[in-house]
Length: 496
Image 1 (cartoon, helix red, strand yellow):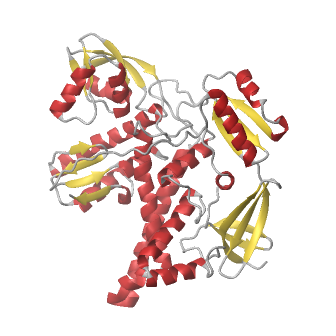
Image 2: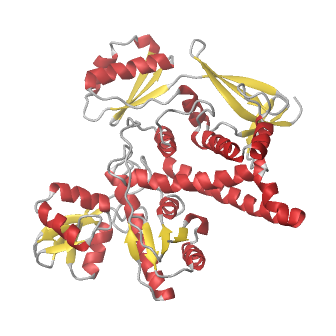
């Protein structure tokens, strides 16, 4: 086969042959490759003894699966996906809960680090994955013309439908789901985190009810949303937060000064003021404390009186002891409101990059690359087409693809922060959530100081958003991003 570029356009699972068939195509040709494949299920063991779990598994044909046991989880590899579903149902009926199964095609893509519409260069019988910023020029079974021509025609005849189809192509690539078989009732950002958990080798929680977050409006101010910014800061090289990287077995710190210690670690303190309340750097920890600590009515009354969105921690008596997040403990000691007694429950991150960090970095890098490509495309169109440049770009599949890709990748960064820190989310883990909140609290503190020092302004916060009395959002965003050495693209800013 001569050198040519093709795109991964279709996967077909054949359970009888224990194979996945991957189809690659361009506008003129198609080819396929066969791969042996056995689907997996990661089931949470919790406190279930391995002998009891094995007894439950004995009700399924032992020749059709293999079970491996690790701390708090079992990894089951089955002959077919039907076997895996039967085993999951069997375990669910036995123990009263299930683990979320993802379809075999998506498992295959995640294991190979591929995705739909990825580009591959074929030459001499082999092929290698290639990075491409062009709209995939491939063939699909349910479309008569090549996909690129179809989109080109739609952008001219029905730009709204063309744009939504491009968005579906982008989601198919980002989420590793088929273009024409989108999972029902599944939020895109939830599928993204399912993929992260699968790559982490951890159980995937079942889908629950959708939840909504409420936001207050501050008219006449400039708004900055730090959700994307905080997710970028949670990944390498800044941090390495993840489902599997926090409190790993291999990198336990020797002291509180170790570089991999997290600010969400717990410290024992003694309070130095009577009837003392304080706002915690971790809303997740404060919410947990609120549910378990006496004087709930007092905290709720103070929330109403002061307009707090999160309950304060307290009240604490002078001389009373307690465990609080390390970042908050340092702040309280600095203000002579408490004294740190000891380093209580340390939290740390692994030296190996987490699946979440890798996924966040991939999103952020591609978002920047595609955004830069859009900027160059605009400059080129203006130079060659003059005042007609906008119409030309509107009908250009490559430009529209790059623009949508950058926007959707950036959108996912903001949504996954919400899913990971909201207690009603099925992905909520208080250890990861409090660590993410500590990252945001550090950004928040620096932004307050930056706004005061550079512009002489006070900042109001609501969730991950900051509000200031300035209309110079561009300068604000650019200068603070430069301070952190993070691309300004990730600090959402607008006037409200």
